[in-house]
Length: 75
Image (cartoon, rainbow, N blue to C red; front, side, top):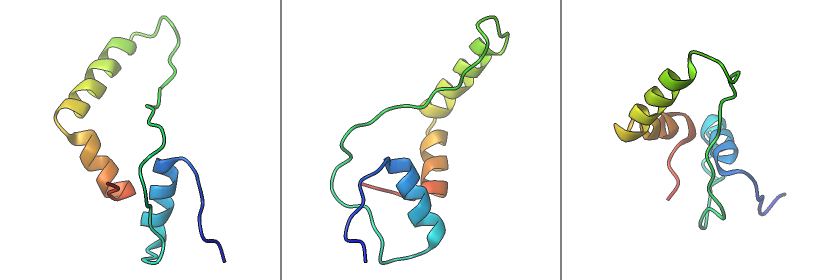
């Protein structure tokens, strides 16, 4: 039996949400927060458009809704 695991929050939230196991939960605060990045070639014509769309998704709450849908909610 495992009493505790320390790991990256989004990965743990995904595993818990997908497993449907109610006895597993995240507790305590998140130690450190960071964003993910997408790599594009330096001269990619998609760079500005992608940045604008990601910013819009963040500002209108879509990224939060996606996270809650796929990863669940952690306070």
